[in-house]
Structure formats: structure tokens, C-alpha cells
Image (cartoon, rainbow, N blue to C red):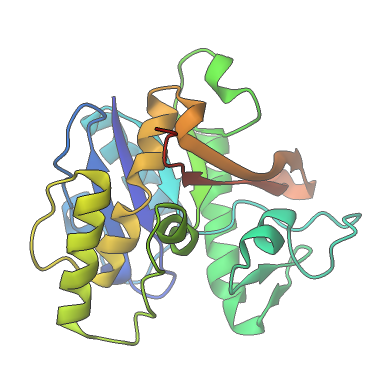
Length: 241
């Protein structure tokens, strides 16, 4: 079983960050969007088809996407955002269908939700639900938030991508390698580091090991049009000594 984490983008495929690892390995692999046949501006159907095709060719059983899987439930007492986003203090807030805060996040939010929806409905990926570890084997699709993963692994958050500092990226690469035990190559980009930091959560799902996983939110609920409301955000957990 192999796992794949993806730092999404809605403007250019070249802004995707991908990290892949076998659960028994300590050496992640970082495929490029081009190796998956992705180029130009992201489009839902071609992107979902390429991700599913690549997953099948690589034996990938778990995919993590850094983006919302569903909209805020209209009856939620939490205003403007989903429960998971409130708990983790995400910069983007997903509202009821067609709304986000800030408004500049709406294109990205919509792309992510529609990608989740297409992978689930057309390609058979299952959204993570409570009790996932007791379910029969399948292909899991889960939402992650890399910024919180850094903190939950005992590190400070990786600064904004706007800070294009190679020394800073090298420093965070070394820190991540020390905490996870991964052998990480030099020259990782911001997007690749954001994908790599959530790999332990994907491995925990593949290994059916809830002790190494933190789930925030609640089960995705059906929404009109085939998408969902709410859902879980997963993060890696440092095991107790």
C-alpha cells in the first residue's frame, strides 16, 4: 500500500506539491505534476482522472488533499466556516455552497470540493468517516491541513510561500527529517514540504492505526448536487512514549 499527499492549487498545476511513500519506507518520493500528465490550468475532470490513473498504477490506497472536501452545513451554529476550520484556525473559511472567507479563496475552495466530489462519485474513492479503521479495505480520500501538521509534530508552522528563502526551506527540511525519520532530498519546494509533512497521517490511515492520527470535525454529510457538508481534517499524531 502506497500513500500520496497533494498540496493543491487552482491556478497552475506547477503549483501542486506531491509527496508519496510506502508505509514501510522512510524515503518519500516527490513526483512532479508533469509525471502525472498534468499541465496548464487545473480542470476538475482531467485532474481527477489523472490522479486516479496514477494512484492505480502506483498501488496508492490513501490520498490526502490540502483543501476543503465540503461546504459548511447551513444549520451549523458556527458562522462562516466548518467546525474543523474553526478548531484548526485555517486561513480560508468555507461557508455555505458558493461562499468563502475571504472571497479570494472561493475559486480554490470550489476547485477542491469539486475535485473531492469527482474522485468520490466517479472513481470510487471513499471519504474518511468515524470508525474508518474497522471498515474493509478500500481507497481512502482525506482532507489535510499542513500548517497544523507542523505544529502537531512539535515544530513551528512553515512560513508563507511568499517568503522565497532557500535557507529557510532547507532548515524546515532538516527539521522534518529529524522528527519523522524520513530521508528527504535537498532542494524541496514549499509545496513539496507542505505535502511531505502530512505523509505520517496518510501512513496511519493505510496502516489502520488511529493512535497516530488526529481527526478534527465530524462525518461528511450529503449535500444537494452530490457534494458534502463538513467532513474531517486529519493530522499526524506523535505517539505516546
